[in-house]
Length: 136
Image (tube, rainbow, N blue to C red; front, side, top):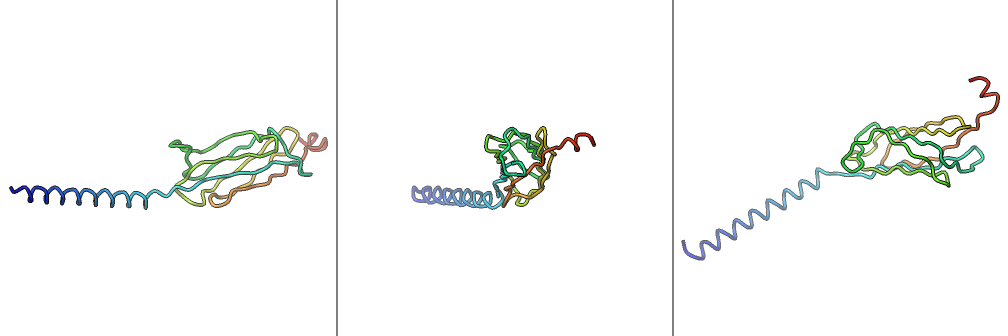
């Protein structure tokens, strides 16, 4: 083979390889749609006083991941402003979830939603009265 033919053949192989890599990269980007699955909120009393250390449980009904680990249930305690944040990723929009909140001296509360796009909640807990305690 002549030197020109070798150069032409190598150049052609390089163009084919580059095109293939580009097409595979473009296809991969179309397949992988990651969404931020974020559920945030604040837990307060009925008179809007923030509740620190309320136990917040997130139950997920769909494909939500923390890194590569599938998330089904997560617990955390609210911070000093009554706030909580659950942040993960999902390959779907509108993954359904339920949040349950418990705090000693208050009636438990649960809310449901779907995220993304919006998973922001204000949860107001009602104090347990002496009459409520007697019924239990």
